[in-house]
Image (cartoon, rainbow, N blue to C red):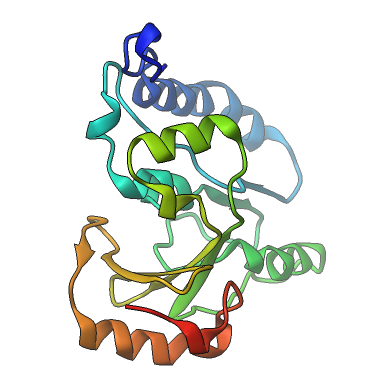
Length: 203
């Protein structure tokens, strides 16, 4: 879509596609799930970039290429007699699925650790189409492998494989220039960093 010969802007409305998918879930899938007499978990491994039709490449936020909320905040629904009806806004990692599944198998109340931070990881991108887009927009850094730590205090801390670190507001995805907060958060998660040698971190 972003090639000049295709008009240089998105030809599909991904926001509408998401709305249509949610309507389908409400109208078709959930009535079926309600009638199935079993425990179940519905989840996704990652999200997708939500961009409206006619969006131009230069108007796409840089975090849409990496760890925007569209990409990392995914559905997780549990149906079981032991689970109360409602929505939980706690930070939950997909790594908690093992504990949830074990709880369902044992017909126990679902419990999970409410973490102060969770980690999101992505490996380096080699897809030539992505590489073209990222380089064209000056986002080569976003092609690298990274780990993003999401904190309950409302921060995202990105650590790239080359040691570059970036701090963002969790809700707005705006980059923050707060050296003290970044240093404090880095100290908290230093032993969890695996994407690079933590001794080589750069601001």
